[in-house]
Image (cartoon, rainbow, N blue to C red; front, side, top):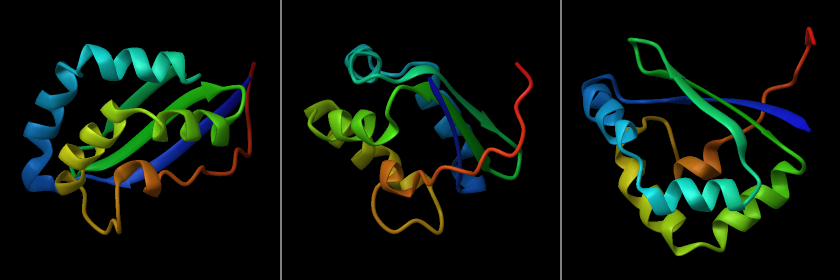
Length: 105
């Protein structure tokens, strides 16, 4: 299982609403993530809007491609895009994996 971590920047003025949206992620979005191979997926956010995402998957590119094929992902990404700053395109397109430098099992 590959561990994937990425960073995005939520607009600080939209942070409260961003948190509210993630308190009730659509059931069909949750199901699509699971069915597409996203496991142990978490988002963490600092008060300045720095967002850290973490997930585990067999194949990150295949998991991303599987989500691309779902209608619910397109709707979710369109709704989430305005929450981010310094982002060209959709949030899922800005998820660039960080290089893992240490892991304690």
